[in-house]
Amino acid sequence: MRHFRDELRAGGWTVDYREIDARPATLSGELRRAIRKLKPQRVRVVEPGDYRVLEALRSVCAPIEIVTDTHFLSSLADFRRHAEGRKQLRLEFFYREMRRRYGVLMDGAQPAGGEWNYDSANRGAFGKAGPGLVPAPAAFLPDHLTRQVLERVRELFARHPGQLNRFDWPVTPAQAEEALEDFLDNRLTAFGEYQDAMWTAQPYLYHSRLSVALNLKLIHPRRVITAADERYRTGQASLAAVEGFIRQILGWREYVRGIYWLHMPGYAAMNALDAHQPLPRFYWTGETDMQCLRAAIGQTLEYGYTHHIQRLMVTGLFALLLGVEPKEVHEWYLAVYVDAVEWVELPNTMGMSQFADGGIMASKPYAATGKYIQRMSNYCSGCRYDPAVSTGSKACPFTTLYWDFLLRHDELLRKNPRMTMQMRNVDRLLPGNKTAIQIQAQELRKRL
Ligand SMILES: Cc1cc2nc3c(=O)[nH]c(=O)nc-3n(C[C@H](O)[C@H](O)[C@H](O)COP(=O)(O)OP(=O)(O)OC[C@H]3O[C@@H](n4cnc5c(N)ncnc54)[C@H](O)[C@@H]3O)c2cc1C
Ligand code: SF4
Image 1 (cartoon, rainbow, N blue to C red):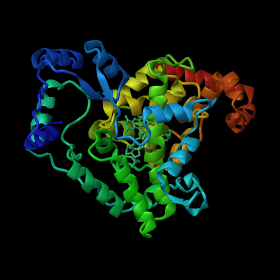
Image 2: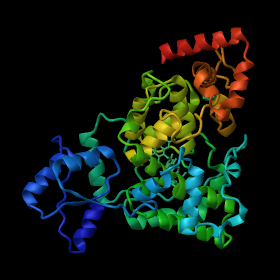
Image 3: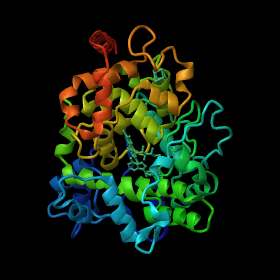
Protein backbone atom coordinates (compact mmCIF):
# COMPACT_ATOMS: atom_id res chain seq x y z
CA MET A 1 0.00 0.00 0.00
CA ARG A 2 2.78 2.41 0.85
CA HIS A 3 4.66 1.74 -2.38
CA PHE A 4 1.39 2.28 -4.24
CA ARG A 5 0.68 5.45 -2.27
CA ASP A 6 4.07 6.89 -3.23
CA GLU A 7 3.65 5.89 -6.85
CA LEU A 8 0.28 7.65 -6.99
CA ARG A 9 1.65 10.76 -5.33
CA ALA A 10 4.57 10.81 -7.77
CA GLY A 11 1.96 10.68 -10.56
CA GLY A 12 0.29 13.83 -9.22
CA TRP A 13 -2.64 12.25 -7.30
CA THR A 14 -3.72 13.48 -3.90
CA VAL A 15 -3.75 10.51 -1.54
CA ASP A 16 -5.18 10.56 1.98
CA TYR A 17 -3.34 7.64 3.53
CA ARG A 18 -3.59 6.74 7.19
CA GLU A 19 -0.69 4.81 8.71
CA ILE A 20 -1.40 2.22 11.39
CA ASP A 21 -0.62 3.28 14.93
CA ALA A 22 -1.04 1.90 18.42
CA ARG A 23 -4.60 3.20 18.80
CA PRO A 24 -7.24 0.63 17.98
CA ALA A 25 -8.84 1.61 14.66
CA THR A 26 -11.45 0.10 12.39
CA LEU A 27 -11.92 0.55 8.66
CA SER A 28 -15.43 1.91 9.18
CA GLY A 29 -14.17 4.35 11.83
CA GLU A 30 -11.45 5.60 9.50
CA LEU A 31 -13.89 5.97 6.62
CA ARG A 32 -16.26 7.96 8.85
CA ARG A 33 -13.37 10.23 9.84
CA ALA A 34 -12.28 10.67 6.23
CA ILE A 35 -15.82 11.55 5.11
CA ARG A 36 -16.11 14.16 7.88
CA LYS A 37 -12.76 15.65 6.96
CA LEU A 38 -12.90 15.53 3.16
CA LYS A 39 -16.66 16.03 2.60
CA PRO A 40 -16.66 14.10 -0.67
CA GLN A 41 -19.41 14.44 -3.30
CA ARG A 42 -19.50 10.66 -3.61
CA VAL A 43 -17.67 7.61 -2.32
CA ARG A 44 -16.57 4.92 -4.76
CA VAL A 45 -14.86 1.72 -3.66
CA VAL A 46 -13.75 -1.32 -5.55
CA GLU A 47 -15.44 -4.58 -4.47
CA PRO A 48 -13.70 -5.64 -1.25
CA GLY A 49 -12.34 -9.15 -0.70
CA ASP A 50 -14.34 -9.86 2.37
CA TYR A 51 -18.07 -9.76 3.20
CA ARG A 52 -17.48 -8.15 6.61
CA VAL A 53 -15.68 -5.22 4.98
CA LEU A 54 -18.49 -4.72 2.48
CA GLU A 55 -20.99 -4.57 5.34
CA ALA A 56 -18.80 -2.18 7.32
CA LEU A 57 -18.45 0.18 4.34
CA ARG A 58 -22.18 0.12 3.68
CA SER A 59 -22.94 0.83 7.34
CA VAL A 60 -20.92 4.05 7.23
CA CYS A 61 -21.85 5.45 3.90
CA ALA A 62 -25.10 5.21 1.97
CA PRO A 63 -25.22 5.40 -0.93
CA ILE A 64 -21.81 3.98 -1.65
CA GLU A 65 -20.76 3.17 -5.18
CA ILE A 66 -19.21 -0.30 -5.48
CA VAL A 67 -17.08 -0.67 -8.59
CA THR A 68 -16.50 -4.09 -10.22
CA ASP A 69 -13.07 -5.47 -9.45
CA THR A 70 -11.39 -5.80 -12.84
CA HIS A 71 -8.60 -7.87 -11.35
CA PHE A 72 -10.67 -11.01 -11.83
CA LEU A 73 -11.64 -12.75 -15.04
CA SER A 74 -15.11 -13.77 -13.92
CA SER A 75 -17.17 -10.97 -12.39
CA LEU A 76 -19.61 -11.76 -9.59
CA ALA A 77 -22.47 -11.30 -12.08
CA ASP A 78 -20.77 -13.71 -14.53
CA PHE A 79 -20.50 -16.33 -11.82
CA ARG A 80 -24.10 -15.87 -10.75
CA ARG A 81 -25.13 -16.47 -14.37
CA HIS A 82 -22.95 -19.60 -14.48
CA ALA A 83 -24.59 -20.90 -11.27
CA GLU A 84 -28.14 -20.15 -12.33
CA GLY A 85 -30.29 -23.24 -12.80
CA ARG A 86 -27.48 -25.66 -11.87
CA LYS A 87 -28.27 -28.10 -9.07
CA GLN A 88 -24.59 -28.54 -8.34
CA LEU A 89 -21.51 -26.45 -9.08
CA ARG A 90 -18.30 -28.15 -10.12
CA LEU A 91 -14.92 -26.64 -10.99
CA GLU A 92 -14.56 -28.64 -14.20
CA PHE A 93 -17.57 -27.11 -15.99
CA PHE A 94 -16.73 -23.59 -14.88
CA TYR A 95 -13.11 -24.05 -15.93
CA ARG A 96 -14.07 -25.26 -19.42
CA GLU A 97 -16.34 -22.24 -19.79
CA MET A 98 -13.46 -19.94 -18.84
CA ARG A 99 -11.03 -21.65 -21.24
CA ARG A 100 -13.50 -21.17 -24.10
CA ARG A 101 -14.36 -17.62 -23.10
CA TYR A 102 -10.75 -16.45 -23.00
CA GLY A 103 -9.42 -18.80 -25.71
CA VAL A 104 -6.78 -20.16 -23.31
CA LEU A 105 -5.09 -23.43 -24.34
CA MET A 106 -7.64 -23.85 -27.10
CA ASP A 107 -7.19 -25.03 -30.66
CA GLY A 108 -10.28 -23.56 -32.22
CA ALA A 109 -13.26 -24.96 -30.34
CA GLN A 110 -11.25 -27.87 -28.90
CA PRO A 111 -8.92 -27.96 -25.89
CA ALA A 112 -5.24 -28.03 -26.87
CA GLY A 113 -3.99 -31.63 -26.93
CA GLY A 114 -7.54 -32.97 -26.98
CA GLU A 115 -8.02 -33.09 -23.17
CA TRP A 116 -9.33 -30.40 -20.84
CA ASN A 117 -7.51 -31.58 -17.78
CA TYR A 118 -4.14 -33.23 -17.13
CA ASP A 119 -4.72 -33.69 -13.41
CA SER A 120 -3.66 -37.33 -13.56
CA ALA A 121 -0.19 -36.19 -14.69
CA ASN A 122 0.01 -33.81 -11.69
CA ARG A 123 0.50 -36.32 -8.90
CA GLY A 124 4.18 -37.21 -9.04
CA ALA A 125 6.24 -37.81 -5.89
CA PHE A 126 10.03 -37.50 -5.60
CA GLY A 127 10.72 -41.04 -4.38
CA LYS A 128 13.50 -41.82 -1.91
CA ALA A 129 16.09 -39.79 -3.81
CA GLY A 130 14.20 -36.57 -3.06
CA PRO A 131 13.79 -33.51 -5.25
CA GLY A 132 17.53 -32.87 -5.76
CA LEU A 133 18.53 -29.31 -6.45
CA VAL A 134 15.44 -27.11 -6.79
CA PRO A 135 16.08 -23.62 -8.21
CA ALA A 136 15.48 -21.11 -5.39
CA PRO A 137 12.70 -18.63 -6.20
CA ALA A 138 13.44 -14.95 -6.78
CA ALA A 139 13.67 -13.23 -3.39
CA PHE A 140 13.14 -9.51 -2.82
CA LEU A 141 15.13 -7.87 -0.06
CA PRO A 142 12.98 -5.44 1.91
CA ASP A 143 13.72 -1.84 0.92
CA HIS A 144 13.59 1.15 3.27
CA LEU A 145 9.78 1.42 3.17
CA THR A 146 9.21 -2.30 3.76
CA ARG A 147 11.72 -2.33 6.60
CA GLN A 148 9.83 0.54 8.27
CA VAL A 149 6.60 -1.45 8.10
CA LEU A 150 8.25 -4.63 9.38
CA GLU A 151 9.56 -2.64 12.33
CA ARG A 152 6.10 -1.23 13.03
CA VAL A 153 4.58 -4.72 12.89
CA ARG A 154 7.26 -5.96 15.27
CA GLU A 155 6.30 -3.23 17.77
CA LEU A 156 2.53 -3.42 17.47
CA PHE A 157 2.09 -7.19 17.17
CA ALA A 158 4.95 -8.55 19.22
CA ARG A 159 2.79 -11.27 20.75
CA HIS A 160 1.40 -12.57 17.45
CA PRO A 161 2.59 -15.93 16.08
CA GLY A 162 5.08 -16.11 13.21
CA GLN A 163 8.33 -14.40 12.23
CA LEU A 164 9.28 -11.38 10.14
CA ASN A 165 12.89 -12.08 9.29
CA ARG A 166 12.08 -14.28 6.27
CA PHE A 167 10.11 -11.54 4.48
CA ASP A 168 11.15 -11.57 0.83
CA TRP A 169 7.87 -11.17 -1.07
CA PRO A 170 7.39 -8.95 -4.13
CA VAL A 171 5.81 -5.67 -3.03
CA THR A 172 5.62 -3.72 -6.31
CA PRO A 173 4.28 -4.55 -9.80
CA ALA A 174 7.85 -4.62 -11.19
CA GLN A 175 8.89 -7.17 -8.57
CA ALA A 176 5.77 -9.26 -9.20
CA GLU A 177 6.66 -9.35 -12.89
CA GLU A 178 10.18 -10.48 -11.99
CA ALA A 179 8.76 -13.22 -9.75
CA LEU A 180 6.56 -14.42 -12.62
CA GLU A 181 9.45 -14.52 -15.11
CA ASP A 182 11.61 -16.35 -12.59
CA PHE A 183 8.91 -18.98 -12.09
CA LEU A 184 8.34 -19.43 -15.84
CA ASP A 185 12.08 -19.72 -16.55
CA ASN A 186 13.03 -22.00 -13.68
CA ARG A 187 10.12 -23.93 -12.22
CA LEU A 188 7.09 -24.10 -14.52
CA THR A 189 8.33 -27.17 -16.43
CA ALA A 190 8.27 -29.31 -13.27
CA PHE A 191 5.25 -27.58 -11.66
CA GLY A 192 2.60 -29.92 -13.05
CA GLU A 193 4.28 -33.18 -12.19
CA TYR A 194 5.35 -32.24 -8.64
CA GLN A 195 2.43 -30.00 -7.74
CA ASP A 196 1.30 -32.37 -4.95
CA ALA A 197 4.72 -33.46 -3.64
CA MET A 198 6.15 -32.35 -0.27
CA TRP A 199 9.68 -32.47 1.13
CA THR A 200 11.23 -31.43 4.46
CA ALA A 201 13.00 -28.02 4.42
CA GLN A 202 11.80 -27.35 0.84
CA PRO A 203 8.98 -24.87 1.30
CA TYR A 204 8.51 -23.76 -2.31
CA LEU A 205 9.64 -26.69 -4.48
CA TYR A 206 8.22 -25.93 -7.96
CA HIS A 207 5.42 -23.62 -6.85
CA SER A 208 5.09 -20.07 -8.15
CA ARG A 209 4.73 -18.06 -4.91
CA LEU A 210 2.46 -15.75 -6.88
CA SER A 211 -0.66 -15.86 -4.68
CA VAL A 212 0.45 -12.86 -2.62
CA ALA A 213 1.15 -10.70 -5.69
CA LEU A 214 -2.10 -11.80 -7.33
CA ASN A 215 -4.23 -11.20 -4.24
CA LEU A 216 -2.64 -7.79 -3.64
CA LYS A 217 -3.23 -6.97 -7.31
CA LEU A 218 0.41 -6.36 -8.08
CA ILE A 219 -0.03 -8.53 -11.15
CA HIS A 220 -3.13 -9.33 -13.22
CA PRO A 221 -4.19 -12.99 -13.52
CA ARG A 222 -4.56 -12.52 -17.28
CA ARG A 223 -0.89 -11.57 -17.54
CA VAL A 224 0.14 -14.70 -15.61
CA ILE A 225 -2.10 -16.97 -17.71
CA THR A 226 -1.03 -15.48 -21.06
CA ALA A 227 2.65 -15.74 -20.15
CA ALA A 228 2.27 -19.44 -19.17
CA ASP A 229 0.22 -20.20 -22.31
CA GLU A 230 3.01 -18.61 -24.37
CA ARG A 231 5.55 -21.03 -22.85
CA TYR A 232 3.45 -23.94 -24.12
CA ARG A 233 2.90 -22.36 -27.55
CA THR A 234 6.62 -21.80 -28.01
CA GLY A 235 7.49 -25.34 -26.91
CA GLN A 236 9.27 -24.24 -23.73
CA ALA A 237 6.98 -26.16 -21.36
CA SER A 238 4.76 -29.23 -21.71
CA LEU A 239 1.00 -29.00 -21.97
CA ALA A 240 0.56 -30.97 -18.71
CA ALA A 241 2.73 -28.48 -16.79
CA VAL A 242 1.09 -25.39 -18.27
CA GLU A 243 -2.48 -26.71 -18.04
CA GLY A 244 -1.90 -27.74 -14.40
CA PHE A 245 -0.76 -24.22 -13.58
CA ILE A 246 -3.40 -22.35 -15.58
CA ARG A 247 -6.17 -24.50 -14.04
CA GLN A 248 -5.24 -23.13 -10.62
CA ILE A 249 -5.61 -19.51 -11.68
CA LEU A 250 -8.24 -19.45 -14.44
CA GLY A 251 -10.15 -22.28 -12.73
CA TRP A 252 -9.82 -22.62 -8.96
CA ARG A 253 -9.00 -19.04 -8.10
CA GLU A 254 -11.98 -17.58 -9.97
CA TYR A 255 -14.26 -20.44 -8.94
CA VAL A 256 -13.70 -20.10 -5.18
CA ARG A 257 -14.33 -16.37 -5.38
CA GLY A 258 -17.64 -17.05 -7.13
CA ILE A 259 -18.63 -19.60 -4.46
CA TYR A 260 -17.72 -17.17 -1.67
CA TRP A 261 -19.88 -14.31 -2.89
CA LEU A 262 -22.72 -16.60 -3.94
CA HIS A 263 -23.03 -18.11 -0.46
CA MET A 264 -22.00 -15.40 1.99
CA PRO A 265 -22.83 -14.62 4.74
CA GLY A 266 -24.29 -18.09 5.48
CA TYR A 267 -21.20 -19.95 4.21
CA ALA A 268 -19.01 -18.92 7.16
CA ALA A 269 -21.38 -20.54 9.67
CA MET A 270 -21.78 -23.92 7.94
CA ASN A 271 -20.87 -27.09 9.82
CA ALA A 272 -22.29 -30.00 7.83
CA LEU A 273 -20.28 -32.63 9.74
CA ASP A 274 -21.31 -31.20 13.11
CA ALA A 275 -17.65 -30.90 14.19
CA HIS A 276 -16.95 -29.26 17.56
CA GLN A 277 -13.47 -30.31 18.69
CA PRO A 278 -11.20 -27.34 19.60
CA LEU A 279 -8.20 -26.68 17.34
CA PRO A 280 -5.15 -28.34 18.99
CA ARG A 281 -2.80 -25.83 20.59
CA PHE A 282 0.16 -27.10 18.58
CA TYR A 283 -1.28 -25.39 15.47
CA TRP A 284 0.09 -22.17 16.97
CA THR A 285 3.53 -23.53 17.93
CA GLY A 286 4.33 -26.54 15.71
CA GLU A 287 5.23 -28.51 18.83
CA THR A 288 4.00 -32.00 18.06
CA ASP A 289 5.66 -35.38 17.53
CA MET A 290 3.78 -35.87 14.23
CA GLN A 291 6.54 -34.99 11.75
CA CYS A 292 4.26 -33.96 8.88
CA LEU A 293 2.37 -31.47 11.05
CA ARG A 294 5.56 -30.30 12.71
CA ALA A 295 7.08 -29.55 9.28
CA ALA A 296 3.99 -27.90 7.77
CA ILE A 297 3.17 -25.78 10.83
CA GLY A 298 6.83 -24.92 11.47
CA GLN A 299 7.14 -23.73 7.88
CA THR A 300 3.90 -21.78 8.20
CA LEU A 301 5.19 -19.90 11.25
CA GLU A 302 8.59 -19.29 9.65
CA TYR A 303 7.56 -18.26 6.13
CA GLY A 304 3.82 -17.53 6.33
CA TYR A 305 3.60 -19.98 3.42
CA THR A 306 2.96 -23.62 2.67
CA HIS A 307 1.86 -24.93 -0.67
CA HIS A 308 -1.61 -26.21 -1.46
CA ILE A 309 -1.16 -29.88 -0.60
CA GLN A 310 0.42 -29.08 2.76
CA ARG A 311 -2.62 -26.90 3.53
CA LEU A 312 -5.15 -29.42 2.23
CA MET A 313 -3.62 -32.80 3.02
CA VAL A 314 -1.62 -32.13 6.20
CA THR A 315 -2.99 -29.31 8.38
CA GLY A 316 -6.47 -29.36 6.80
CA LEU A 317 -6.75 -33.14 6.71
CA PHE A 318 -5.80 -33.52 10.36
CA ALA A 319 -8.41 -30.97 11.47
CA LEU A 320 -11.06 -32.67 9.30
CA LEU A 321 -10.33 -36.14 10.67
CA LEU A 322 -10.12 -34.93 14.26
CA GLY A 323 -13.46 -33.14 13.85
CA VAL A 324 -12.37 -29.58 14.66
CA GLU A 325 -14.97 -26.81 14.70
CA PRO A 326 -14.71 -25.39 11.12
CA LYS A 327 -14.82 -21.78 12.34
CA GLU A 328 -11.66 -22.34 14.38
CA VAL A 329 -9.90 -23.92 11.41
CA HIS A 330 -10.96 -20.98 9.24
CA GLU A 331 -9.67 -18.45 11.76
CA TRP A 332 -6.31 -20.23 11.87
CA TYR A 333 -5.85 -20.20 8.07
CA LEU A 334 -6.88 -16.57 7.88
CA ALA A 335 -4.35 -15.64 10.57
CA VAL A 336 -1.23 -17.50 9.49
CA TYR A 337 -0.73 -17.20 5.71
CA VAL A 338 0.68 -14.18 3.88
CA ASP A 339 -1.76 -14.66 1.01
CA ALA A 340 -4.86 -14.96 3.21
CA VAL A 341 -7.93 -13.00 2.12
CA GLU A 342 -11.34 -14.27 3.10
CA TRP A 343 -12.80 -14.68 -0.42
CA VAL A 344 -10.14 -17.29 -1.22
CA GLU A 345 -9.32 -18.69 2.21
CA LEU A 346 -12.88 -19.40 3.39
CA PRO A 347 -14.14 -21.66 0.54
CA ASN A 348 -10.81 -23.48 0.49
CA THR A 349 -11.00 -24.11 4.24
CA MET A 350 -14.69 -24.57 4.95
CA GLY A 351 -15.50 -26.20 1.61
CA MET A 352 -12.55 -27.99 0.09
CA SER A 353 -10.68 -28.90 3.23
CA GLN A 354 -13.31 -29.33 5.99
CA PHE A 355 -16.39 -30.31 3.93
CA ALA A 356 -18.32 -28.00 6.26
CA ASP A 357 -20.47 -26.84 3.32
CA GLY A 358 -21.76 -30.38 2.80
CA GLY A 359 -20.48 -30.59 -0.79
CA ILE A 360 -21.06 -27.16 -2.37
CA MET A 361 -17.39 -26.91 -3.24
CA ALA A 362 -16.06 -30.48 -3.34
CA SER A 363 -17.88 -33.64 -4.37
CA LYS A 364 -16.52 -35.60 -1.38
CA PRO A 365 -14.43 -35.00 1.75
CA TYR A 366 -10.65 -35.06 1.15
CA ALA A 367 -10.10 -37.89 3.67
CA ALA A 368 -6.99 -40.07 3.59
CA THR A 369 -4.76 -42.11 5.88
CA GLY A 370 -1.14 -41.31 6.74
CA LYS A 371 -0.16 -43.47 3.75
CA TYR A 372 -1.08 -40.62 1.40
CA ILE A 373 1.41 -38.38 3.23
CA GLN A 374 4.00 -41.16 3.15
CA ARG A 375 3.60 -41.50 -0.63
CA MET A 376 3.84 -37.78 -1.34
CA SER A 377 6.63 -36.74 1.07
CA ASN A 378 9.57 -37.84 3.21
CA TYR A 379 7.89 -36.79 6.47
CA CYS A 380 7.07 -40.32 7.68
CA SER A 381 10.66 -41.55 7.49
CA GLY A 382 11.57 -39.35 10.47
CA CYS A 383 8.42 -39.98 12.48
CA ARG A 384 7.84 -42.16 15.52
CA TYR A 385 4.49 -43.31 14.05
CA ASP A 386 3.80 -45.78 11.25
CA PRO A 387 1.29 -44.68 8.61
CA ALA A 388 0.25 -48.29 7.92
CA VAL A 389 -0.83 -48.87 11.54
CA SER A 390 -4.19 -47.76 12.94
CA THR A 391 -4.10 -48.94 16.58
CA GLY A 392 -1.48 -49.31 19.31
CA SER A 393 1.49 -47.15 20.29
CA LYS A 394 2.96 -46.94 16.74
CA ALA A 395 -0.36 -46.04 15.13
CA CYS A 396 -0.25 -42.96 12.93
CA PRO A 397 -2.91 -40.55 14.29
CA PHE A 398 -3.98 -39.73 10.71
CA THR A 399 -4.66 -43.41 10.02
CA THR A 400 -6.56 -43.99 13.28
CA LEU A 401 -8.61 -40.85 12.77
CA TYR A 402 -9.28 -41.67 9.10
CA TRP A 403 -11.07 -44.93 9.97
CA ASP A 404 -12.80 -43.27 12.89
CA PHE A 405 -13.96 -40.46 10.55
CA LEU A 406 -15.52 -42.97 8.14
CA LEU A 407 -17.17 -44.82 11.01
CA ARG A 408 -18.52 -41.64 12.62
CA HIS A 409 -20.01 -40.36 9.36
CA ASP A 410 -21.00 -43.75 8.00
CA GLU A 411 -24.62 -42.87 7.25
CA LEU A 412 -23.82 -39.62 5.44
CA LEU A 413 -20.84 -40.95 3.48
CA ARG A 414 -22.66 -44.05 2.21
CA LYS A 415 -25.06 -41.73 0.37
CA ASN A 416 -22.12 -40.33 -1.62
CA PRO A 417 -21.32 -42.45 -4.72
CA ARG A 418 -17.75 -41.10 -4.79
CA MET A 419 -17.15 -42.67 -1.34
CA THR A 420 -18.22 -46.20 -2.32
CA MET A 421 -14.69 -47.62 -2.53
CA GLN A 422 -13.67 -46.13 0.82
CA MET A 423 -16.83 -47.37 2.53
CA ARG A 424 -16.27 -50.88 1.12
CA ASN A 425 -12.96 -50.93 2.98
CA VAL A 426 -14.79 -49.97 6.19
CA ASP A 427 -16.96 -53.07 5.71
CA ARG A 428 -13.80 -55.19 5.66
CA LEU A 429 -12.74 -54.06 9.14
CA LEU A 430 -13.32 -56.67 11.85
CA PRO A 431 -15.73 -55.58 14.64
CA GLY A 432 -12.97 -55.79 17.27
CA ASN A 433 -10.72 -53.62 15.10
CA LYS A 434 -13.45 -51.00 14.68
CA THR A 435 -13.89 -50.75 18.46
CA ALA A 436 -10.14 -50.47 19.05
CA ILE A 437 -9.91 -47.66 16.44
CA GLN A 438 -12.79 -45.78 18.02
CA ILE A 439 -11.31 -46.06 21.51
CA GLN A 440 -7.89 -44.88 20.27
CA ALA A 441 -9.49 -41.97 18.38
CA GLN A 442 -11.39 -40.98 21.50
CA GLU A 443 -8.14 -40.96 23.50
CA LEU A 444 -6.44 -38.85 20.84
CA ARG A 445 -9.26 -36.33 21.02
CA LYS A 446 -8.91 -36.06 24.78
CA ARG A 447 -5.12 -35.71 24.55
CA LEU A 448 -4.84 -33.13 21.74
C1 LIG B 1 -7.21 -24.79 3.55
C2 LIG B 1 -6.69 -23.92 2.45
C3 LIG B 1 -6.58 -22.55 2.63
C4 LIG B 1 -6.12 -21.74 1.59
N1 LIG B 1 -6.03 -20.39 1.80
C5 LIG B 1 -5.62 -19.58 0.78
C6 LIG B 1 -5.53 -18.17 0.97
O1 LIG B 1 -5.83 -17.64 2.04
N2 LIG B 1 -5.10 -17.39 -0.08
C7 LIG B 1 -4.77 -17.95 -1.28
O2 LIG B 1 -4.40 -17.21 -2.19
N3 LIG B 1 -4.86 -19.28 -1.48
C8 LIG B 1 -5.26 -20.11 -0.49
N4 LIG B 1 -5.33 -21.47 -0.71
C9 LIG B 1 -5.05 -22.00 -2.06
C10 LIG B 1 -3.59 -22.40 -2.32
O3 LIG B 1 -3.15 -23.26 -1.31
C11 LIG B 1 -2.66 -21.19 -2.44
O4 LIG B 1 -3.18 -20.30 -3.39
C12 LIG B 1 -1.26 -21.60 -2.90
O5 LIG B 1 -0.73 -22.54 -2.02
C13 LIG B 1 -0.36 -20.37 -3.00
O6 LIG B 1 0.95 -20.73 -3.33
P1 LIG B 1 1.58 -20.45 -4.77
O7 LIG B 1 1.34 -19.05 -5.15
O8 LIG B 1 2.98 -20.93 -4.75
O9 LIG B 1 0.64 -21.38 -5.66
P2 LIG B 1 0.89 -22.30 -6.92
O10 LIG B 1 0.82 -23.70 -6.48
O11 LIG B 1 2.07 -21.86 -7.67
O12 LIG B 1 -0.44 -22.03 -7.79
C14 LIG B 1 -0.55 -20.91 -8.67
C15 LIG B 1 -1.67 -19.98 -8.27
O13 LIG B 1 -2.92 -20.62 -8.42
C16 LIG B 1 -3.85 -20.09 -7.47
N5 LIG B 1 -4.41 -21.20 -6.70
C17 LIG B 1 -3.88 -22.44 -6.55
N6 LIG B 1 -4.73 -23.23 -5.85
C18 LIG B 1 -5.79 -22.45 -5.53
C19 LIG B 1 -7.00 -22.68 -4.80
N7 LIG B 1 -7.31 -23.88 -4.26
N8 LIG B 1 -7.84 -21.65 -4.65
C20 LIG B 1 -7.58 -20.45 -5.18
N9 LIG B 1 -6.46 -20.17 -5.89
C21 LIG B 1 -5.59 -21.17 -6.06
C22 LIG B 1 -3.09 -19.14 -6.58
O14 LIG B 1 -3.34 -17.81 -6.96
C23 LIG B 1 -1.62 -19.50 -6.82
O15 LIG B 1 -0.76 -18.42 -6.68
C24 LIG B 1 -5.77 -22.32 0.34
C25 LIG B 1 -5.87 -23.70 0.18
C26 LIG B 1 -6.32 -24.49 1.22
C27 LIG B 1 -6.44 -25.96 1.01
S1 SF4 C 1 3.53 -41.36 10.28
FE1 SF4 C 1 1.62 -40.24 10.34
S2 SF4 C 1 1.99 -38.56 11.80
FE2 SF4 C 1 3.99 -39.37 11.19
S3 SF4 C 1 4.62 -38.07 9.47
FE3 SF4 C 1 3.60 -39.89 8.60
S4 SF4 C 1 1.48 -39.24 8.34
FE4 SF4 C 1 2.43 -37.76 9.72
